[in-house]
Amino acid sequence: MQFRTDRQRANGLGSAKEGTGHFISQRITSAALVPLTLLFIFPFANALGGSYEEVRAIYASPFNAIVAILFIAVTLYHHMMGLQVVIEDYVHGKLARTAALLANILFCWALGLTGVFAVAKIAFSS
Image 1 (cartoon, helix red, strand yellow):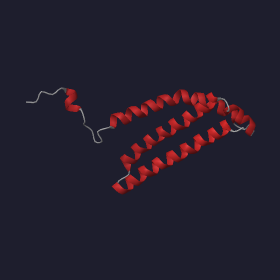
Image 2 (cartoon, helix red, strand yellow; image 1 turned 180 degrees about the vertical axis):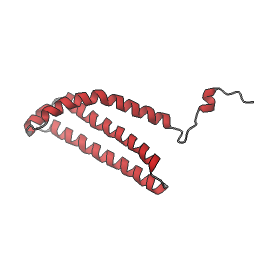
Image 3 (cartoon, helix red, strand yellow; image 1 turned 120 degrees about the vertical axis):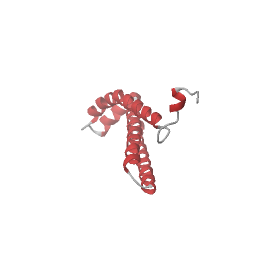
Image 4 (spheres, helix red, strand yellow; image 1 turned 30 degrees about the vertical axis):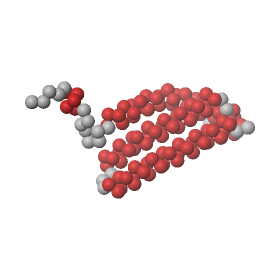
C-alpha cells in the first residue's frame, strides 16, 4: 500500500512532462496580446498611408515604439509556441520534427528581430 496524495500520484505525468507550463505560457501571452493589440492598432492605423515623416513622428513617441516592439515580440513568441504544438502533434519522424521545430524557431526569431529593428530605426532616426 502506498501513502501518496493525489498530487504526488499525478505529478510528472503526461507525455512531455511540461505541457502545463506551455499551456499557461500560451494563455498568458494571449491575455497580454489583448491590450497590446488595442494599444498597437490605433497608432498603426494613424500611420497607414502617411509619409515617412508622419510615421516617424508617431513612432518617435517612446510609448508607441515600446508598445509596437512588445506587440511584435509577444505575438511572435505566441506564434512560435502555437506552431510548436502543431509540429509536435502532426509532424512524424524525429528528423523532420526536429527540422520543422528549428525552422519555426529561426523564422520567428528572424521576423522578430527584423520587426524590432525596423521600429527602433524609425523611432531613433533623426
